Length: 176
Image 1 (cartoon, rainbow, N blue to C red):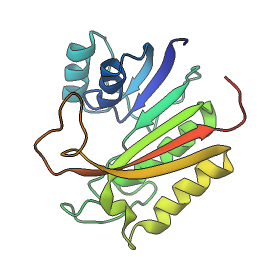
Image 2: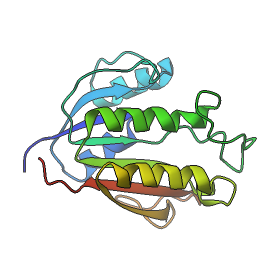
Image 3: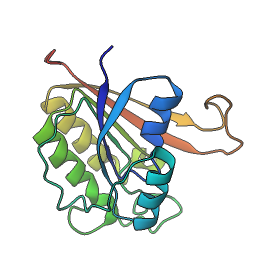
């Protein structure tokens, strides 16, 4: 298998790349987009990289990637938050649209998005459906599932009830 070239959006401390590492998948971090300087510092320490903070709203690079992964901010849809919604240009969770913009531009073979389970609620279901339709309209076969961290984990599950939705898109055009 060739080296998987990845772009981590809303990268935090690098959960996606750490998962790939733990699974023994050969990968290269082509770019990492995170605005929080402390998260970037942690990411660099964990992954032995030298990335700088980047604003996803200004990110517009031409890079060749296989996998785009990220969990757009959940504060505006989480039960623990104010639930102000996924509003383009207004809420942090509205940064979902920036993720869509980048997917449109780069057309990676694989897309993984992670978020809180509450995105499935009636209140936020229209925006979730918009995201799923966007992926379908752009040639991705989509699957999604809710996983609970206390039931899955590598090598052992974590002792925390933490449900998250994972949305996986695989581009169906066969281009590698």
